[in-house]
Length: 242
Image (cartoon, rainbow, N blue to C red):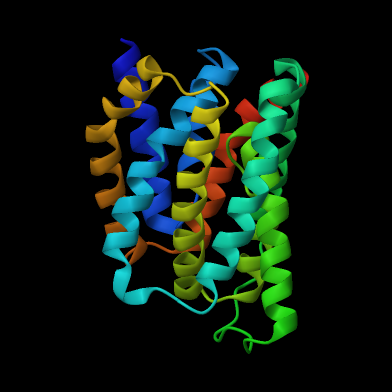
């Protein structure tokens, strides 16, 4: 039963990631943290989302933005190193409520979303600094509660068109997830048993990502994002208010 639940949650998350370039960890973790210990779920999902990030990077390799993506990836990865320390030392109750608040911000962003521009902004030093800074702030949140890189999502969603946004987020999340797993392993949060559970969710991840990637080109992203936000609303409120 546990394997089935993890696969169903991973399928839903991977479908969201294939569609928008993000949402895999947030949706998967939101569903599982209601049923299993917080720190175990965070560490397991960190490994679970590595698979869709790898697959999506391959599927979108011809769309990659190699000028902006690495900047966001570096900021996110450095932030995760700091956030991982918080996960190891802060009480689980504080982290649960923090996760709930982060998801509520994510939900608000999806329900009220400024249309993305037709063209990305010029690549300047200021633009790179903002992208790096938002990536770093997002990494601290991801390292501490596992998901919801809110600052980076907000910045990329408001500044870049749909395809560019997915490209930047995909590369950033791939590098960030690799860093996240290394940090959690070194801190003793990721065990062999949890890693095995993550590997057993690969069927759900693969199917969900393929479905989501197909939907990316067929369904209006704004409608899908709002539906995803409404699905996440109840779990977020439960995390915040217990």
